[in-house]
Amino acid sequence: ANFQGPSYALAKTIQNWRCSLARESTVVSSNITPSCCTESVFHVAAAARVLRGMKYRFAPLTYYEPEWASNLMTALLIYDLCYPDSPANPQTHLDNPLELFSSNGVHSGFWRSPYESETIGKAAYFYGIFN
Image (cartoon, rainbow, N blue to C red):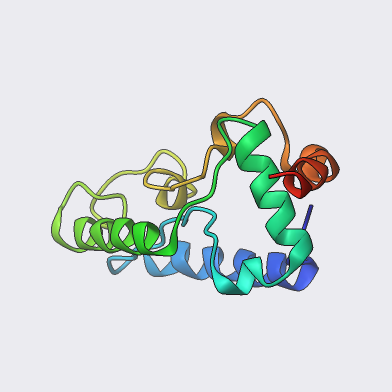
């Protein structure tokens, strides 16, 4: 299920493009955050059901508590700012510009899952009703 829509996809694409350009001359920390069970997500009943169903029936997909994700992202930001071998550092060679986002991305299981997010939405929704 796609909750954000085309405007969100365009905004994220522009953000990634700007980060890639800025990294040519400065440190750029742009890590992918995990799916979180925040108030803004769980106040939409359909989104809450999909995330709950995803976590309980489609391993390794999961979501995290916001406090945990916040601590993790803070640690990754400190790593990006302080360690010269971080992909955020323009002196670090990247084989592909997208490594800036994927090297330390916290993907909630999507990158190692046998499922595509668009193919499990309805099933996850129905599993989420019962969890």
